[in-house]
Length: 368
Length: 89
Image 1 (spheres, rainbow over the protein chains, first blue to last red):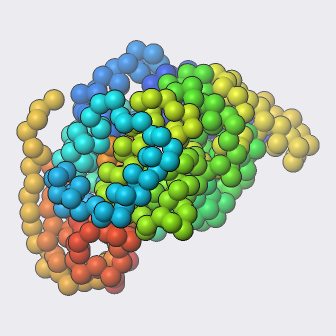
Image 2 (image 1 turned 90 degrees about the horizontal axis):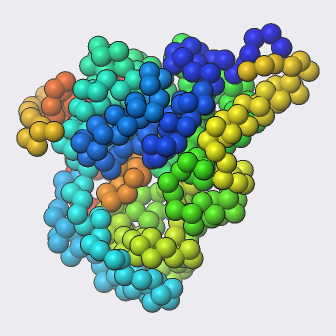
Protein backbone atom coordinates (compact mmCIF):
# COMPACT_ATOMS: atom_id res chain seq x y z
CA UNK A 1 0.00 0.00 0.00
CA UNK A 2 3.02 2.25 0.28
CA UNK A 3 2.80 4.62 3.17
CA UNK A 4 0.65 3.88 6.21
CA UNK A 5 -2.64 5.74 5.60
CA UNK A 6 -3.15 6.15 9.34
CA UNK A 7 0.09 8.04 9.81
CA UNK A 8 -1.19 11.55 9.19
CA UNK A 9 0.10 15.05 9.74
CA UNK A 10 -1.81 15.03 13.03
CA UNK A 11 0.44 12.16 14.15
CA UNK A 12 3.52 14.15 13.18
CA UNK A 13 2.28 17.30 14.91
CA UNK A 14 1.49 15.55 18.18
CA UNK A 15 4.04 12.74 18.09
CA UNK A 16 1.34 10.09 18.40
CA UNK A 17 1.06 6.67 16.81
CA UNK A 18 -2.59 6.80 15.75
CA UNK A 19 -4.78 9.73 14.62
CA UNK A 20 -7.46 9.00 17.20
CA UNK A 21 -8.49 11.70 19.66
CA UNK A 22 -10.56 10.68 22.66
CA UNK A 23 -12.73 13.37 24.20
CA UNK A 24 -13.69 12.36 27.72
CA UNK A 25 -14.57 13.71 31.13
CA UNK A 26 -12.60 10.91 32.82
CA UNK A 27 -8.90 11.28 33.64
CA UNK A 28 -8.36 7.50 33.58
CA UNK A 29 -9.53 7.35 29.98
CA UNK A 30 -7.14 10.17 29.08
CA UNK A 31 -4.19 8.30 30.55
CA UNK A 32 -5.16 4.99 28.98
CA UNK A 33 -5.65 6.38 25.46
CA UNK A 34 -2.48 8.47 25.54
CA UNK A 35 -0.46 5.50 26.74
CA UNK A 36 -2.02 3.36 23.98
CA UNK A 37 -0.61 5.63 21.28
CA UNK A 38 -3.64 7.84 20.69
CA UNK A 39 -4.39 11.34 21.91
CA UNK A 40 -6.88 12.35 24.57
CA UNK A 41 -8.58 15.53 25.71
CA UNK A 42 -10.16 16.02 29.11
CA UNK A 43 -13.37 18.06 29.20
CA UNK A 44 -13.18 20.49 32.10
CA UNK A 45 -16.08 22.86 31.36
CA UNK A 46 -17.62 22.59 34.82
CA UNK A 47 -14.42 22.45 36.84
CA UNK A 48 -12.86 25.21 38.88
CA UNK A 49 -9.42 26.53 38.02
CA UNK A 50 -7.99 24.71 41.05
CA UNK A 51 -9.60 21.42 39.98
CA UNK A 52 -8.17 21.83 36.50
CA UNK A 53 -4.67 22.38 37.89
CA UNK A 54 -4.98 19.23 40.00
CA UNK A 55 -6.21 17.20 37.03
CA UNK A 56 -3.31 18.36 34.88
CA UNK A 57 -0.87 17.28 37.56
CA UNK A 58 -2.59 13.89 37.85
CA UNK A 59 -2.49 13.27 34.10
CA UNK A 60 1.17 14.26 33.86
CA UNK A 61 1.97 11.77 36.61
CA UNK A 62 0.40 9.01 34.49
CA UNK A 63 1.55 9.87 30.96
CA UNK A 64 4.93 11.51 31.55
CA UNK A 65 6.02 13.65 28.63
CA UNK A 66 3.35 12.41 26.23
CA UNK A 67 1.01 15.17 25.05
CA UNK A 68 -2.63 15.49 26.09
CA UNK A 69 -5.27 18.19 25.90
CA UNK A 70 -7.77 20.10 28.00
CA UNK A 71 -11.12 21.22 26.57
CA UNK A 72 -13.20 24.16 27.75
CA UNK A 73 -16.56 25.22 26.40
CA UNK A 74 -15.55 28.83 25.89
CA UNK A 75 -18.78 30.78 25.60
CA UNK A 76 -19.55 32.53 22.33
CA UNK A 77 -22.60 34.47 23.49
CA UNK A 78 -23.82 35.50 26.92
CA UNK A 79 -27.11 37.03 28.04
CA UNK A 80 -27.26 39.15 31.15
CA UNK A 81 -27.98 36.74 34.00
CA UNK A 82 -30.70 37.00 36.65
CA UNK A 83 -30.32 35.57 40.15
CA UNK A 84 -31.77 32.12 40.81
CA UNK A 85 -34.95 33.32 42.53
CA UNK A 86 -35.75 35.61 39.63
CA UNK A 87 -35.10 32.86 37.13
CA UNK A 88 -37.34 30.40 38.98
CA UNK A 89 -40.12 32.97 39.23
CA UNK A 90 -40.15 33.32 35.44
CA UNK A 91 -40.98 29.66 34.76
CA UNK A 92 -44.64 29.49 33.66
CA UNK A 93 -47.05 27.48 35.84
CA UNK A 94 -47.97 25.35 32.81
CA UNK A 95 -44.38 24.11 32.61
CA UNK A 96 -44.06 23.53 36.33
CA UNK A 97 -47.27 21.47 36.23
CA UNK A 98 -45.99 19.38 33.32
CA UNK A 99 -42.70 18.68 35.14
CA UNK A 100 -44.73 17.70 38.22
CA UNK A 101 -46.86 15.41 36.04
CA UNK A 102 -43.73 13.59 34.80
CA UNK A 103 -42.39 13.33 38.33
CA UNK A 104 -45.61 11.72 39.54
CA UNK A 105 -46.13 9.46 36.51
CA UNK A 106 -42.65 7.94 36.76
CA UNK A 107 -42.28 8.24 40.51
CA UNK A 108 -39.13 10.32 40.10
CA UNK A 109 -37.43 10.56 43.52
CA UNK A 110 -36.38 13.85 45.05
CA UNK A 111 -32.66 14.69 44.83
CA UNK A 112 -30.73 13.67 47.94
CA UNK A 113 -29.16 17.09 48.36
CA UNK A 114 -29.28 20.61 47.04
CA UNK A 115 -29.43 20.60 43.28
CA UNK A 116 -25.98 21.20 41.86
CA UNK A 117 -27.42 23.59 39.32
CA UNK A 118 -28.69 25.84 42.09
CA UNK A 119 -25.18 26.20 43.48
CA UNK A 120 -23.69 27.08 40.13
CA UNK A 121 -23.36 30.71 39.23
CA UNK A 122 -23.39 30.20 35.50
CA UNK A 123 -20.45 30.13 33.16
CA UNK A 124 -19.71 33.77 32.54
CA UNK A 125 -16.64 35.27 30.98
CA UNK A 126 -14.97 35.66 34.38
CA UNK A 127 -15.13 31.96 35.26
CA UNK A 128 -14.08 30.85 31.78
CA UNK A 129 -11.19 33.28 31.81
CA UNK A 130 -9.87 31.90 35.11
CA UNK A 131 -10.15 28.36 33.77
CA UNK A 132 -8.20 29.38 30.72
CA UNK A 133 -5.52 31.18 32.69
CA UNK A 134 -4.59 28.02 34.59
CA UNK A 135 -4.29 26.10 31.32
CA UNK A 136 -1.87 28.73 30.05
CA UNK A 137 0.07 28.77 33.32
CA UNK A 138 0.41 24.99 33.22
CA UNK A 139 1.41 25.03 29.54
CA UNK A 140 -0.91 22.16 28.73
CA UNK A 141 0.30 20.69 25.42
CA UNK A 142 -3.04 21.21 23.68
CA UNK A 143 -5.97 23.47 24.49
CA UNK A 144 -9.27 22.77 22.77
CA UNK A 145 -12.08 25.28 22.59
CA UNK A 146 -15.29 23.32 22.33
CA UNK A 147 -17.40 26.26 21.21
CA UNK A 148 -16.23 29.88 21.20
CA UNK A 149 -13.29 30.92 19.04
CA UNK A 150 -9.92 30.66 20.79
CA UNK A 151 -8.38 33.30 18.50
CA UNK A 152 -7.83 35.83 21.30
CA UNK A 153 -5.47 33.52 23.19
CA UNK A 154 -3.57 31.96 20.30
CA UNK A 155 -0.50 34.17 20.67
CA UNK A 156 -0.28 33.54 24.41
CA UNK A 157 -0.63 29.79 23.87
CA UNK A 158 1.89 29.58 21.06
CA UNK A 159 4.43 31.62 23.06
CA UNK A 160 4.17 28.88 25.70
CA UNK A 161 4.72 26.11 23.17
CA UNK A 162 1.09 25.03 23.24
CA UNK A 163 -1.15 23.95 20.36
CA UNK A 164 -4.71 25.22 20.08
CA UNK A 165 -7.59 23.30 18.49
CA UNK A 166 -10.97 24.78 17.63
CA UNK A 167 -14.14 22.71 17.37
CA UNK A 168 -16.66 24.12 14.92
CA UNK A 169 -20.09 23.29 13.54
CA UNK A 170 -20.13 25.62 10.53
CA UNK A 171 -17.64 26.14 7.71
CA UNK A 172 -17.55 29.91 8.13
CA UNK A 173 -16.43 29.51 11.73
CA UNK A 174 -13.71 27.11 10.59
CA UNK A 175 -12.50 29.64 8.03
CA UNK A 176 -12.39 32.38 10.67
CA UNK A 177 -10.41 30.23 13.12
CA UNK A 178 -8.00 28.91 10.49
CA UNK A 179 -7.26 32.46 9.38
CA UNK A 180 -6.62 33.36 13.02
CA UNK A 181 -4.03 30.58 13.21
CA UNK A 182 -5.49 27.64 15.14
CA UNK A 183 -3.32 24.56 14.83
CA UNK A 184 -6.10 22.05 14.20
CA UNK A 185 -9.78 22.38 13.28
CA UNK A 186 -12.27 19.81 14.52
CA UNK A 187 -15.25 19.70 12.16
CA UNK A 188 -18.20 18.35 14.10
CA UNK A 189 -21.27 16.96 12.38
CA UNK A 190 -24.85 16.50 13.44
CA UNK A 191 -24.34 12.83 14.41
CA UNK A 192 -22.39 13.87 17.51
CA UNK A 193 -23.38 13.67 21.15
CA UNK A 194 -24.37 16.76 23.07
CA UNK A 195 -24.22 20.06 21.22
CA UNK A 196 -23.65 19.71 17.51
CA UNK A 197 -23.69 21.81 14.41
CA UNK A 198 -26.64 21.58 12.04
CA UNK A 199 -24.65 19.93 9.24
CA UNK A 200 -23.98 16.21 8.88
CA UNK A 201 -20.48 14.82 9.42
CA UNK A 202 -20.25 13.56 5.84
CA UNK A 203 -20.90 17.07 4.54
CA UNK A 204 -19.04 19.33 6.91
CA UNK A 205 -15.73 17.44 6.99
CA UNK A 206 -14.89 17.72 3.27
CA UNK A 207 -16.27 21.27 3.19
CA UNK A 208 -13.83 22.30 5.91
CA UNK A 209 -10.99 20.26 4.39
CA UNK A 210 -11.45 22.21 1.17
CA UNK A 211 -10.80 25.53 2.88
CA UNK A 212 -8.29 24.40 5.53
CA UNK A 213 -5.11 24.46 3.43
CA UNK A 214 -2.30 22.93 5.49
CA UNK A 215 -4.23 23.08 8.76
CA UNK A 216 -5.14 19.54 9.82
CA UNK A 217 -8.87 18.84 10.00
CA UNK A 218 -10.22 16.28 12.45
CA UNK A 219 -13.59 14.63 11.83
CA UNK A 220 -16.15 14.49 14.63
CA UNK A 221 -19.70 13.25 14.99
CA UNK A 222 -20.71 9.61 14.97
CA UNK A 223 -17.15 8.27 14.76
CA UNK A 224 -16.93 4.99 16.67
CA UNK A 225 -15.31 2.36 14.46
CA UNK A 226 -12.25 1.75 12.35
CA UNK A 227 -14.45 2.01 9.28
CA UNK A 228 -15.39 5.52 10.40
CA UNK A 229 -11.70 6.31 10.86
CA UNK A 230 -10.87 5.08 7.37
CA UNK A 231 -13.80 7.02 5.90
CA UNK A 232 -12.67 10.18 7.67
CA UNK A 233 -9.18 9.83 6.22
CA UNK A 234 -10.76 9.40 2.78
CA UNK A 235 -12.77 12.60 3.35
CA UNK A 236 -9.49 14.41 3.84
CA UNK A 237 -9.39 14.45 7.62
CA UNK A 238 -6.10 13.97 9.46
CA UNK A 239 -7.77 12.18 12.34
CA UNK A 240 -10.95 11.60 14.29
CA UNK A 241 -12.49 13.10 17.42
CA UNK A 242 -14.41 10.49 19.40
CA UNK A 243 -16.55 10.94 22.50
CA UNK A 244 -19.33 8.39 22.83
CA UNK A 245 -16.79 5.66 22.07
CA UNK A 246 -15.22 5.98 25.52
CA UNK A 247 -18.32 6.38 27.68
CA UNK A 248 -18.67 2.65 28.27
CA UNK A 249 -14.96 1.83 28.27
CA UNK A 250 -13.49 -0.15 31.15
CA UNK A 251 -11.71 2.93 32.51
CA UNK A 252 -14.68 5.28 32.24
CA UNK A 253 -16.08 6.48 35.56
CA UNK A 254 -19.62 6.55 34.21
CA UNK A 255 -22.22 4.76 36.31
CA UNK A 256 -22.53 1.07 35.35
CA UNK A 257 -26.22 1.68 34.62
CA UNK A 258 -25.29 4.23 31.98
CA UNK A 259 -22.63 1.95 30.53
CA UNK A 260 -25.19 -0.84 30.18
CA UNK A 261 -27.63 1.53 28.51
CA UNK A 262 -24.95 2.64 26.04
CA UNK A 263 -24.03 -0.95 25.15
CA UNK A 264 -27.69 -1.77 24.53
CA UNK A 265 -28.50 1.42 22.60
CA UNK A 266 -28.70 2.02 18.86
CA UNK A 267 -28.75 5.31 16.98
CA UNK A 268 -32.54 5.24 17.15
CA UNK A 269 -32.30 5.36 20.93
CA UNK A 270 -30.78 8.85 20.74
CA UNK A 271 -32.78 12.02 20.32
CA UNK A 272 -31.86 15.58 19.38
CA UNK A 273 -33.88 17.35 22.03
CA UNK A 274 -34.20 20.74 23.69
CA UNK A 275 -36.10 19.28 26.63
CA UNK A 276 -33.09 18.79 28.87
CA UNK A 277 -31.59 22.25 28.77
CA UNK A 278 -33.49 24.41 26.32
CA UNK A 279 -30.56 23.94 23.96
CA UNK A 280 -30.73 21.28 21.26
CA UNK A 281 -28.46 18.40 22.19
CA UNK A 282 -28.25 14.70 21.39
CA UNK A 283 -28.87 12.36 24.32
CA UNK A 284 -30.17 8.88 25.00
CA UNK A 285 -33.95 8.87 25.08
CA UNK A 286 -35.52 8.74 28.54
CA UNK A 287 -38.98 9.41 30.00
CA UNK A 288 -38.18 13.12 30.32
CA UNK A 289 -37.28 13.57 26.64
CA UNK A 290 -40.14 11.36 25.48
CA UNK A 291 -42.80 13.16 27.50
CA UNK A 292 -41.64 16.57 26.25
CA UNK A 293 -41.93 15.25 22.69
CA UNK A 294 -45.67 14.49 23.08
CA UNK A 295 -48.48 16.76 21.94
CA UNK A 296 -49.50 17.24 25.56
CA UNK A 297 -46.23 18.97 26.42
CA UNK A 298 -45.96 22.75 26.53
CA UNK A 299 -43.41 24.39 24.29
CA UNK A 300 -39.90 23.81 25.65
CA UNK A 301 -38.46 26.81 27.45
CA UNK A 302 -35.16 28.40 26.60
CA UNK A 303 -32.03 28.09 28.73
CA UNK A 304 -31.69 28.39 31.67
CA UNK A 305 -35.39 27.93 32.46
CA UNK A 306 -35.74 24.45 30.94
CA UNK A 307 -32.59 23.33 32.75
CA UNK A 308 -34.05 24.57 36.02
CA UNK A 309 -37.11 22.44 35.30
CA UNK A 310 -35.19 19.29 34.31
CA UNK A 311 -32.55 19.45 37.03
CA UNK A 312 -34.87 17.96 39.66
CA UNK A 313 -35.54 14.96 37.38
CA UNK A 314 -31.88 14.52 36.43
CA UNK A 315 -30.47 14.72 39.90
CA UNK A 316 -33.27 12.63 41.44
CA UNK A 317 -32.67 9.92 38.83
CA UNK A 318 -28.90 9.96 39.29
CA UNK A 319 -28.90 10.21 43.09
CA UNK A 320 -31.13 7.15 43.35
CA UNK A 321 -29.59 5.32 40.35
CA UNK A 322 -32.95 4.79 38.67
CA UNK A 323 -32.07 2.88 35.51
CA UNK A 324 -35.47 3.61 33.97
CA UNK A 325 -34.92 7.36 34.26
CA UNK A 326 -31.19 7.95 33.77
CA UNK A 327 -29.69 9.13 30.51
CA UNK A 328 -26.43 10.43 29.03
CA UNK A 329 -25.36 12.44 26.01
CA UNK A 330 -24.63 10.02 23.19
CA UNK A 331 -23.94 10.29 19.47
CA UNK A 332 -25.52 8.23 16.72
CA UNK A 333 -22.43 6.04 16.61
CA UNK A 334 -23.62 4.48 19.86
CA UNK A 335 -24.93 1.59 17.74
CA UNK A 336 -21.37 0.30 17.56
CA UNK A 337 -20.71 0.35 21.32
CA UNK A 338 -21.32 -3.30 22.09
CA UNK A 339 -19.10 -4.09 25.08
CA UNK A 340 -17.11 -2.47 27.87
CA UNK A 341 -13.61 -2.83 26.51
CA UNK A 342 -10.39 -1.36 27.92
CA UNK A 343 -9.40 1.86 26.17
CA UNK A 344 -6.22 0.30 24.80
CA UNK A 345 -8.24 -2.42 23.12
CA UNK A 346 -10.63 0.15 21.67
CA UNK A 347 -7.67 1.98 20.12
CA UNK A 348 -6.14 -1.21 18.77
CA UNK A 349 -9.44 -2.52 17.38
CA UNK A 350 -10.13 0.78 15.66
CA UNK A 351 -6.69 0.86 14.04
CA UNK A 352 -6.87 -2.78 12.97
CA UNK A 353 -10.32 -2.32 11.41
CA UNK A 354 -9.30 0.86 9.60
CA UNK A 355 -6.24 -0.82 8.13
CA UNK A 356 -8.32 -3.78 7.01
CA UNK A 357 -10.71 -1.37 5.28
CA UNK A 358 -7.83 0.20 3.38
CA UNK A 359 -6.63 -3.27 2.48
CA UNK A 360 -10.08 -4.09 1.15
CA UNK A 361 -9.98 -1.00 -1.03
CA UNK A 362 -6.41 -1.24 -2.29
CA UNK A 363 -5.80 -4.96 -2.19
CA UNK A 364 -2.52 -4.28 -0.44
CA UNK A 365 -1.62 -4.81 3.19
CA UNK A 366 -0.41 -2.12 5.57
CA UNK A 367 1.05 -2.12 9.04
CA UNK A 368 0.38 0.57 11.61
CA UNK B 1 -5.95 30.59 42.56
CA UNK B 2 -6.74 34.25 42.98
CA UNK B 3 -10.43 35.09 43.38
CA UNK B 4 -10.07 38.67 42.19
CA UNK B 5 -12.37 39.47 39.28
CA UNK B 6 -10.86 39.56 35.83
CA UNK B 7 -10.38 43.17 34.65
CA UNK B 8 -13.22 44.34 32.36
CA UNK B 9 -12.45 47.29 30.12
CA UNK B 10 -15.45 48.72 28.24
CA UNK B 11 -15.08 50.56 24.95
CA UNK B 12 -16.98 51.80 21.93
CA UNK B 13 -16.37 50.89 18.29
CA UNK B 14 -18.02 53.67 16.31
CA UNK B 15 -17.25 51.98 12.99
CA UNK B 16 -19.44 49.03 13.94
CA UNK B 17 -22.25 50.87 15.69
CA UNK B 18 -25.53 50.35 13.85
CA UNK B 19 -24.23 47.52 11.66
CA UNK B 20 -26.20 44.33 11.28
CA UNK B 21 -24.38 41.16 12.37
CA UNK B 22 -24.84 37.44 12.94
CA UNK B 23 -23.46 35.61 15.96
CA UNK B 24 -22.61 31.90 15.95
CA UNK B 25 -23.10 31.78 19.70
CA UNK B 26 -23.67 29.39 22.56
CA UNK B 27 -21.86 28.27 25.66
CA UNK B 28 -21.75 25.77 28.48
CA UNK B 29 -25.07 24.66 29.93
CA UNK B 30 -25.21 25.56 33.60
CA UNK B 31 -25.20 22.60 35.95
CA UNK B 32 -24.03 20.17 33.27
CA UNK B 33 -20.83 19.25 31.52
CA UNK B 34 -22.45 19.96 28.16
CA UNK B 35 -22.30 22.89 25.80
CA UNK B 36 -24.81 24.17 23.28
CA UNK B 37 -24.86 26.27 20.13
CA UNK B 38 -27.20 29.24 19.62
CA UNK B 39 -27.55 31.58 16.66
CA UNK B 40 -28.41 35.27 16.90
CA UNK B 41 -28.64 38.21 14.53
CA UNK B 42 -29.26 41.86 15.27
CA UNK B 43 -27.73 45.30 15.35
CA UNK B 44 -24.40 46.12 16.94
CA UNK B 45 -24.57 49.00 19.40
CA UNK B 46 -20.81 49.55 19.09
CA UNK B 47 -20.32 48.81 22.77
CA UNK B 48 -17.72 46.19 23.64
CA UNK B 49 -15.97 44.83 26.72
CA UNK B 50 -12.45 43.41 26.89
CA UNK B 51 -12.11 40.71 29.55
CA UNK B 52 -8.61 40.12 30.95
CA UNK B 53 -5.25 40.08 29.23
CA UNK B 54 -4.80 39.21 26.41
CA UNK B 55 -8.10 41.00 25.77
CA UNK B 56 -11.09 38.77 25.16
CA UNK B 57 -13.48 41.06 23.29
CA UNK B 58 -17.30 40.85 23.40
CA UNK B 59 -19.71 43.03 21.45
CA UNK B 60 -23.30 43.93 22.38
CA UNK B 61 -25.94 42.94 19.84
CA UNK B 62 -29.44 44.43 20.23
CA UNK B 63 -32.76 44.57 18.37
CA UNK B 64 -32.41 40.87 17.69
CA UNK B 65 -34.10 39.67 14.51
CA UNK B 66 -32.90 36.10 15.04
CA UNK B 67 -32.67 34.40 18.39
CA UNK B 68 -33.49 30.97 19.81
CA UNK B 69 -37.16 30.29 20.57
CA UNK B 70 -38.00 31.63 24.00
CA UNK B 71 -34.76 33.58 24.37
CA UNK B 72 -35.37 36.14 27.11
CA UNK B 73 -34.65 39.75 26.31
CA UNK B 74 -33.58 41.55 23.17
CA UNK B 75 -29.83 41.74 23.62
CA UNK B 76 -26.87 39.38 23.70
CA UNK B 77 -23.13 39.76 24.20
CA UNK B 78 -21.22 38.03 21.41
CA UNK B 79 -17.61 36.92 21.24
CA UNK B 80 -15.83 39.07 18.64
CA UNK B 81 -14.46 36.13 16.66
CA UNK B 82 -17.87 34.46 16.50
CA UNK B 83 -19.46 37.60 15.10
CA UNK B 84 -20.06 38.00 11.35
CA UNK B 85 -20.70 41.64 10.50
CA UNK B 86 -22.54 42.47 7.28
CA UNK B 87 -20.16 43.96 4.76
CA UNK B 88 -17.01 42.86 6.58
CA UNK B 89 -16.75 39.20 5.57
